Image 1 (tube, rainbow, N blue to C red):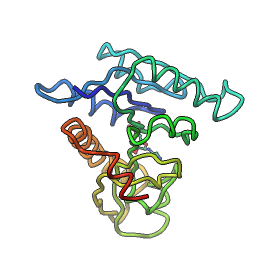
Image 2 (cartoon, rainbow, N blue to C red; image 1 turned 45 degrees about the vertical axis):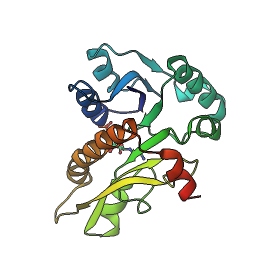
Image 3 (cartoon, rainbow, N blue to C red; image 1 turned 135 degrees about the vertical axis):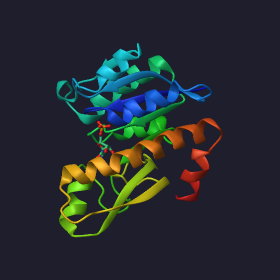
Length: 198
Ligand code: GAR
């Protein structure tokens, strides 16, 4: 059974989908803890499931690396096989990447390398493109630049707002995330993906 830690900043709807999937009979992974960089509303999903939570408030640390060290300490306490960034709206520092990659993956609401960064949906809409997407990647220290595990296109429709487009992307992200976790639990080799792309 693959053990996961999920890190969030927001409402955690993708976390919720993952938690629901892990409760299905035969799903080969379990969430052992959920962490956040702030008092995120999505921590409630973990509490509802009786899963331990932790918060490492970014603003309480003098540097990104200090924050990363505190985050790592929490993560190591649970000894997970995989860490999933699911809407963690912070760049993770190199000490975290070095300690965890390739067992550190991220979901992103765009078809990378298109529209990286904190505003992937807004930037796609502003560009005037008629298609964007969702991606799951290995985190490698760049901004949404790591090896792509899986991605899928989502159409931008006339009249879309950032919110309506994001709400159409999220179900795709959830499906890709659940499939990816299942595939990793069943032997998908993240290390070889990282080596291929380096
Ligand atoms: C998701 O769309 C995730 O891909 C995005 O934040 C949303 C979180 O939603 N992450 C990023 O944009 C990271 N660059 P949720 O809190 O409802 O799961």
